[in-house]
Length: 114
Ligand SMILES: [Zn+2]
Ligand SMILES: [Zn+2]
Image (cartoon, rainbow, N blue to C red; front, side, top):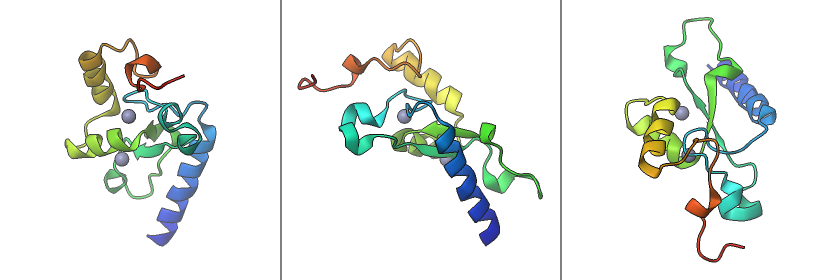
């Protein structure tokens, strides 16, 4: 169990190192746009397939991880493990964003921006 968790942590480090964007895959927000340097590179790794549901011996691959912000991560788990794609579609429908991965900063930055 300990070994498995260590491996998982290593995988998550590799996953984060592989990211070229730190925008949330569900809502599209990059924390750096809101928090500035304090939020730069802040993202969470979400297992699309719950670790508990993996077959014995089956390992999580990079493709099984999704990069999501802390809020979306909670919402995903709060709703019976909603898929990242379903949450992204839900948010697009609510906000009219063209693509979850392409946030328009004017939609969520405060009046003091720039
Ligand atoms: Zn998000
Ligand atoms: Zn998760």
